Amino acid sequence: MISAKLYILQRLTALIMAPLVLGHLVLMIYAVQGGLSASEILGRTQGSAFWAIFYALFVFAVSVHAAIGVRTVLFEWLKIRGSVLELLSWGLGLGLLVMGLYSVYAVTA
Amino acid sequence: MISYSLAPHRRNLLWSAFLLHRLSGVCLALFLPLHFWVLSQALHNPAALEGFLEWTDLWYVKLGEYILVFLLGAHFFGGLRLMAFEALPWSNRQKTFAASAFALSFILATLFLFSAVQYG
Image 1 (tube, chains in turn red, green):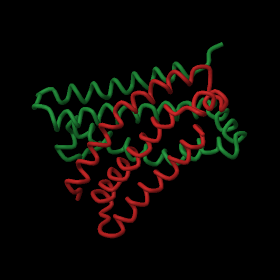
Image 2: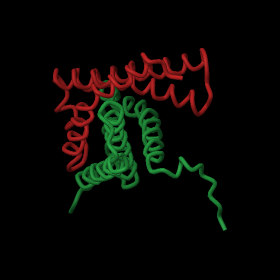
Image 3: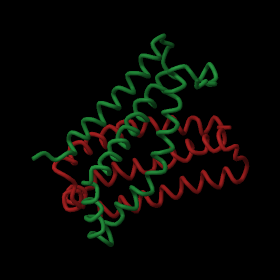
Image 4: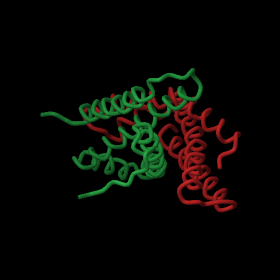
């Protein structure tokens, strides 16, 4: 089951991500032209406060959103309950947050 | 003869839209750790990042990217449809909205593929 708090948090993070996903999609379609290279990607992102904030916010929102979404699937389809459910969803959320923020740091620092 | 025993509600287009939203979400959640790991290579192993990006030039990796962009589009447009469905006044055009979300995702992914393929 999903509590009212998680339900609202799921919609709130979706709303935060809506413009970010759109920006990410447009950037991908633009950047992929002529193939991707590390220097091209890093040339755009390194030292850029804009991309650092853009993607850090994206990582925060997606970590919460994915953890709640996967939690619902684990509950409904795999019948996982109680502390195991809490552990798996918190683990996924925190794991994505740490990995995501580290990758944002790696490409923008 | 093959007999289909799909429950009646699961033959509805909107159930397929629900299923696509759920499965695309799970796939994206599974893909994210790999995505983050590849980007983090920029910090301590730039050569590995470059090698990985070269690997994405292979046609079957491009096909995988095409599917991923489609899934992101489907989750994005499907999510907007879901929130409009919950928050806005009722409309009888739910199936049209779901089909439009699917079509937009397909167009978006195809745009990405056209942009990604190197000509000449």
